Structure formats: C-alpha cells, structure tokens
Amino acid sequence: MTFDREIQVPYPPESRRSGIHDEAFHRVVWYGLTLTLTPEERADRLLLHFGAVDYSATVWVNGRLVAQHDGGHTPFTADITQQAQAGETVEIVLRAQDNPHDLTKPRGKQDWQLRPHSIWYPRTTGIWQTVWLERVPETYLHRLTWTSDMERWELGLRLEVAGPLPPGLSVRVRLFRNQELLADDRYGLRHAELARQIALPDPGIDDFRNDLLWSPGHPQLLRARVDLMVGEQVIDRVRSYTALRSVCVKGNRFLLNGRPYYLKMVLDQGYWPDSLMTATDEELRRDVELTRQLGFNGARKHQKIESPRWLYWCDVLGLLVWEEMPSPYRFTPAAVRRLTHEWQEVLERDMSHPCIVAWVPFNESWGVPDLPTNPAHRDYVRALYHLTKTLDPSRPVIGNDGWEHVATDILTIHDYADDPATLRQRYGTLETTRLTLSQQQPADRVLTLAGFQETDQPVMLSEFGGIAYIPDQSSGWGYSQSQSEADFLNDYAVLLAAIYDCHGLSGFCYTQLTDTFQEKNGLLYADRSPKANLLALARSTQGNRTAREMTIDPLMNPYGNTARWLNRQYEALMTPEVAEDAEE
Image 1 (cartoon, helix red, strand yellow):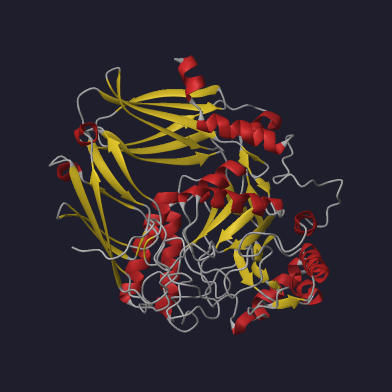
Image 2 (cartoon, rainbow, N blue to C red):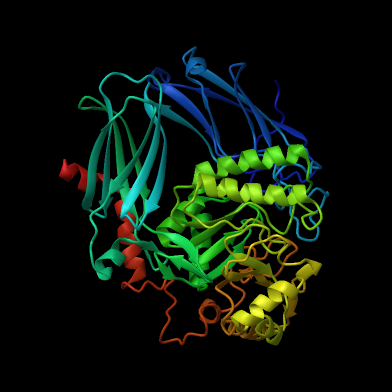
C-alpha cells in the first residue's frame, strides 16, 4: 500500500496540527507505520493501544487482522505479540471509516455540513487520541476498577487478569495517603477476575474524616500499588489511585460526602482552534486550572468523551464532572445499538474517576426527537437511565439533560432568558420553581412528560447565560451580547447575582468556558486568554465574594495554601517509590 501524506498523530486530518488541515469530507482514511523492534521488545507480550478512533476502525499488523472496533470516543487494544515475534519489523495499518453524513452514530457536535453552522463544529476523522505500544508479561493485570463506599468507610476493587493463571497466583494491594500506609491486603487468585472491599480505619470525628475525603476544596487522592505475584515473585505491577467520597441526591439537594453541596459548573465543549478535539496534556491541565480560577467547582463536558488525562487533572486539581454521551441525531435500531454499546464502554473506561459525579446519556432529546409522542423514545431514555444505574449505582444519572424528562435524578433546565428579573420570577423559590416546571417551555419544549414521577429532585439550570463579547467584531453569536469589557463584566455579574437569588435551584452550569468557533459566548477566547479580569469574573461566579475573601489562587482550598498542598499531592502521585521502597 502506498501512502501519499504524512500526519502528526493523534491530531485529526481536519486540524492544523496534523500537518494536513483538510476540512473536506473524509469517508475513509488509512494510516500506516513501520516499526523496528529490539529483541527485548519482541520477547514480551506486546499490546497496541488506541485511545479513540472515529468511527469504525480496522487494524492489521504485518498483513494480519488484529482488531476491529466501532465507536469514535472509546479505547480498544490489540495483542500483536504473535505478529511482533515474527521479525524485527512491524508494519501497522489502520483503516478508519467515518461517514460524515451518517446521523445514526454518536457524533456529538461534529457537523454533517461542509462548514460549521449553528451549534455544530468541524468534524474529527480517524485517530484523535493517543496511540501507544505496551510491553506486558505473559500473565498481567488487565483492568482495575475502583469504587467508593464512604458510609462503610471502604473502597471497592475489581480487577481482571489476562493470560494463563499459574499455581500460587495472588495479588497484593497497598493504599497510601501521601506517605502513610493505609492498607496492605493480599488475595489468592483462582480465577481471572477478583472483587474485594478494602476497609479503611475510620478516623472518627469530622476533622479527621474530612482530611481523608476527596472534594474540590480538598482533592485528597489515595495512591494504590497493585502487585501480581507468583509465590513471593512480582510478575506484574500497576500503580493507580482512588479516592474516598460519596455523591447522591436527597430531596432537593445534591450531596457531596453526605453534605449539601451547591454546584457551580461551566459548560466545557473541549475544542481547540488548531487541534479541534485533541489537546496536549498541558492544555488539558490548563483548562482545569482556568475553570477553577474562574470560580467554578465543576464542569459539564458537553457532547464529548474527553481524554482520560483531562479526567486525571480533574481528579488531582479537584473539579467535579458531569460526563455526557455524544449524541446521534436519528432514532433507528442501528442508532440505539451504537449508542448503547459505546455508552457501556464509556462507563467501563471512566467509572474509577472520583471527579465524575453524574452521568448524562442524552442531551436535549437529540437522537430521541419524538419523546412527547413516541413511547419507544421514552422507553429508550428510561432504559439508558436504568442501565446506567445498574452498572454504576453510586452516581446520579440525568436521563435527558435540558427538558422532556422521563427519568432523572436531577431536574435540569436549559433556559437562556437574559433578563435577571425573569430568572428570579421563574426560580426564586421552591414554589415558583415547581410552577415553572409545570408551565415553562424553553425552546418550546415541556420540562417533564406525562408519567414522570417527581420526588422533589434537585433542580438545576444546566445551561444558561451564553453572553457574547466580540471586541474585534468578527462573525459569531451568543444568546445575548455585551458591547465592552466593562459591560461584559457587569452583565455576567448581574446574571450570576440573579442565579444566587434563585433559591429554588441547587446549582447551575453557565454557558460556556471558551469561545468555540462561531459561538462567541465564552468567558475565555478560543485560545484560552480571558475576555476580562479573571478575579472579577470569579467573584461573580462565587456570588460576589469580596476581594479580601478571595485571591487569584486558582483553587481556593480551605485547608491552607492550595498550590503548595496540591504540589505535594502531585509529587506523591508521581514519585511513589520513595515511600514504598522505604516501607519495604
């Protein structure tokens, strides 16, 4: 096969950073790479990992089929040991099929027209997340999944082992808080899967309990070291992390660690001008830092399954996340199969992240356009809601974010009214909020459908605002517009002040973090530079707290100097050997 272009992976060919920047329609793209392996690399089992390929991927190594995967946002792996051992040279070929006009596949904000229009953006074709090779032993730790049970003061661990199971196989699990050893357990392995609850010592009074719990103000992570052993010999080792925290809803409140917690979130679409949906690790971390600097404690990642590295930084830096499935735009049997399959892969990939506090399988009835009139559409939303609760009973689920609710733990509303008085009138009290739920129709959509059982769920504005400020007068739009930086600061402050006067709400999600192509309603420009003073914006986000109460420090940690505390935790995560080697 002859290849006529070079591309910088993992950037998609539509992006500038790829070196191609071809924004035309691409139904099929091919990739080829030839590697030379050392004898040491060929001696072990060799895995080829793909972070995400949009949409349908087929992979050959040295001419032999090794993997097929459908789903543009989830990872897959090929064991290429046999092909790699055949010789020093390994030729990898990938074919990605991605029909740009197919509205039955989960595609999120990717436009089906040639140029971005309305609320849709440039397409992403083929490889758009990291590709890497991993050497593993013959028997190795294949998957770890962590869960948290704060009420019982326990952490759940599920692990899977791949390869033959030799006699005397066991696993040793150690948990550390910074340099302190919290648990040291060992379990025999007779099967490829193991599920255990690891009990932690209850610290007793709240002061000590709170110091161990994860929250945005105190994102305490627990390092994990998992050793796969035969007798006393370690044959594989994984370093991981987890956290102890709980999330749930009770009455009209969202609870974090058993206490009412007001959600101050921002809509984050995860696009960059030069690289589209792909970003460097530094860019992903910077987005989390900027979100915290703007005063938010959470982000709703909109119509995108983001790189696991973004979720890692949310774990480390303390940012709550609503994870939302990218939508198809038609309701067909194929669309149902595709979304259901990929959503289960999303849950499997990301369930262990403590930062995720809600799952969102549908948004604004996209892919289920006839919810009010078609029972099959309603049953589909209910099915995904209950499937999600079945696979992860520890988190709230929003069945269809925005309106036309049939099954949800949080009643979410998308309301872009730009008059603060209107927002106060609609959501000022619990009584007016309940009245709004029964009468208001944003975007001509009812908020709850017949048969929905209200149980005093929390109510949130999960989209509002969208104030555009376009000083260079370039083309673009927002839901309202400010004419100067001073007006922008004032308009944002007045709108957020109205939200804090709305006592019928348990939180909000402002639209949006950054300008995104033709949408110019971000608090930041597309290049992540701020449109106005960050501290002034953060004061409004936080409810007009005074300058004395706030600093430009990004995370406002109540436990002392945030940056210093986080640096200590980050260093502990990155250099665990010191404490562990000393312990041994």
